[in-house]
Length: 179
Image 1 (cartoon, helix red, strand yellow):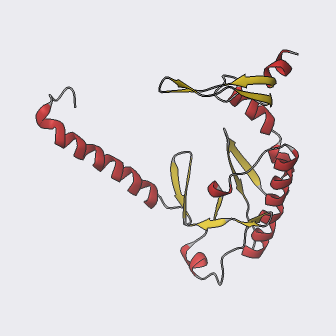
Image 2: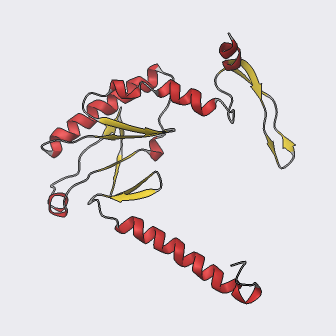
Image 3: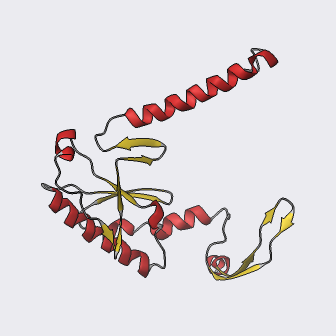
């Protein structure tokens, strides 16, 4: 009963720079920014991997990656499309939506195999095509289609270089302990 009252007939408002928004009434749902929100979301989506037939899910918070392999590109394409349709059905039945802007696929293989492909796989969720990328970021790590560290190292190097440059600009105005 306590959980039911927490999840239904609530209201919330937001404060930004001292200004309060208007009160919004919620028929049901987890109040955004609540302490229990992340835990309840994880419980809610816990059975998502059960809808998969050909792939493996890796889930962290609200981020899900699925992995499919096959003896051929066509086999992998069919398998991933079946499971993406299963995910779509699961989302619909659980009243959740997928952010298609953030949804992408990464085809992993050797340089030779990827460079000699006649065409890229056609990956869809429902009628919506999913864009293929050569590099993606997951849990803060950049991964490329050849499983090299090049993109990740480039990103880290740029951050370090930027930090060193900022420190050099202020070195004349502060002591070494502050730097």
